Amino acid sequence: MPLKIAIFISGRGSNLNAIIQAVADKRLDAKIQVVVSNDPEAQGLTIARQHGLKTFALSHKGMKRAEHEQAVLKHLEEYEIDFVVLAGYMRVLSSEFLRRFKDSRGFYKVINIHPSLLPAFPGTNGYEEAFNYGVKVSGVTVHLVDEQVDHGMIIAQEPFPRFNDDTLETFKARGLSVEHALYPAVLQQIAKEGIRFNERKKVETAK
Ligand code: GRF
Image (cartoon, rainbow, N blue to C red; front, side, top):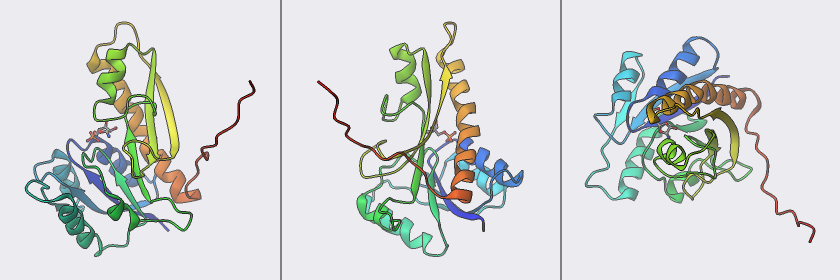
């Protein structure tokens, strides 16, 4: 059974494109039910439409967060959705929204890709912040979404080097190509085996 997903975007849509390609190449057993955007002008919507995917675009501007989320949820009722896949979605989802996707184990079936090795460099400018900090190694994180920003359980992380002659552009391009391989691979793992993560534990350290 393919994993039925809704992909949420706000912009360029290069991760969306990587997922579409992985499905087309049969590297990913998933069905993209709908592509959702909070920006009707998002480039990614054009990519989605070019591939014949259904789209739902609703600007959040002038709407309360709850109102916007309710409208999105209402639209999603038209589809069977196993997982919400955030791919550059620039809105924080409230716990009311997330609760709709609660699994029997208590986590939310909402996943995100973040351009740093979390918990380093959360927030909207992961690549810029890691680069400006002067890291020698950075990476990409795929994690479950919870009520806190860039905080949920980590499903996968993939490191990549920062070379001395990197510019922000070459650094970002290296990271993005890691994202484009990692996200479809993680989704395929979920399609086959479900969700796997290492529980967070507080281990007492010897004094
Ligand atoms: C990616 O860098 C992703 O990690 C971050 O937002 C960016 C989205 O890029 N969450 P794109 O729209 O998939 O090209």
